[in-house]
Image 1 (cartoon, helix red, strand yellow):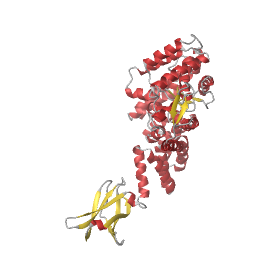
Image 2 (image 1 turned 180 degrees about the vertical axis):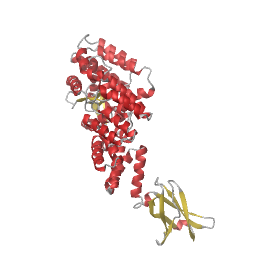
Image 3 (image 1 turned 90 degrees about the vertical axis):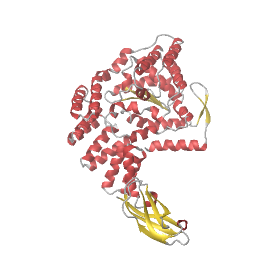
Length: 510
C-alpha cells in the first residue's frame, strides 16, 4: 500500500496548502481549476495502474496476442489525440464484466467481457477513443479536484479490506473499478469523451457510426439490470439515450463510411469467444462454492479446464474446492498449477500461501505470501504474514504486518487491530485503559476504569497520585475487564477526589 500512501500525502499537502491553478483543457481549450498538475496526474496513474489490473482479474494471459492487437489500435488513436505524448498503455483484463477504464496519464484497460460484446474493430476504436479522451483531457484529475479528492486511494483500501471470495475471480470489476479510486465522471465529461473520441477514430479512418452502435450496446446491456449491477458496471460511464442521440448527431456531421475490420476483430477475439462456455462453467462453479458444494463446483471446473486448460482462474477455483473438501494436498497442487498458468496474478500466490500456512509449511507459505503482497497488498495476506512472523518470534515484523492489515478495516482488520493491542498493551496500558476518580456513599475515593482496548484484559494495576506532592499508592483491580467494560476499585481514602489523579500503570491481555 506504499504507492497509495504517497498519493494520499500529495493530496493532503495540496489541499492543506490551498494550491489550485487554472489549467487549460488540452482537448477543448477550456480553462479549468485543478489542484493536481499534469505531471502529478501522470505519476498517480502510473502508481495505480498495476494495482488496478491486479484487483480486477489481472492481465488476460490465455491469448496474449489479443493484448498486442488491442494495444495496436489504442496507440493508433493516441497518436492523433490532442495529447499524443502521454505514456499511453493499453491492456486487456481477465474479467468478464463488460467495462473499460482510463487512469490519468493514459493508462487504459478493457475487460475481455466487453470485447465479446463488440462486433468489429471500429467499435473497439470507439471504446478506446473514448478512454483516450478521458486521459488526454485529464478528466480523472479534474473530477477529483472538483470533489476535493476524498475518494482517492479507495481502490487499494477496498481490495485490502476484502477477504478472498470465490466470486472475486469473475466479478471484481463489478465491485471495484476505476470509479472506486476516481470520482465518477460527470455527464459533461462523458459527452465530451464521446464527441472527441469519435473525432479521433474518424481521423484514423474508422466509421463514426460504430460509436453510435457502442452506446446502443451499453444501453442494451443496462436494460433489466439491477441498480447494483449498473453502479458497478457503468459507475464511471453511465449509459443513456442522450449519449446515443449525441453520438448519432456527431457521426452525421462526419464523413460516412470508413473502416470496420470485422473479420480481423473476430479473429482477434476468437479465443475468448471459443472459451466462453468455460467461463460460463466457472460462474456456475463459483455459485456452487458459495453454496458450499465443492463436488458440484469440481464438476463445472472439470468442464472449464477441458475447454481451456491454460486459464489460471479455473485452477485456482479447483484449489478452493479441494480446500473446502479438506484435501489440502490437492488444493496446494491446484493453486500451484494456477501459478504456472499465470505467475503474475496475486490471487494465485495468495491462495497457495494461505493453504501452505494451514498445512504448517511456513517457509513456503512465507515465500508465496510475500510474492502476493508484492503484486497487490491485501489484508488477508498481511495478516497471515503477521502470524508467521509472530510464530517465529519476530515481533517487529509481526506488528508491521498487522498494522497494514488493520488499516484496511473489515473483519480481518479488526483481528489485526486486536493482535496489535496484545503486543502494545503491556508497554502502553494508559493508551487503552481509561481512568478516572469518584466517591462512594461513604465519601471514599473510588478509582474508576474502562477497558477501551477491544480485547479482554487482566492484571490491571491503578495508581492514585496526590497532586500536591506526587505521593502515590498502587491498587490491583480485582478480576478481569471485558472489552468496553467499566470497573472500580475502592481506596479506603476519604478525601476530595480533585486533590488526586488516577493512572493505569500495568495491564496485560487475557
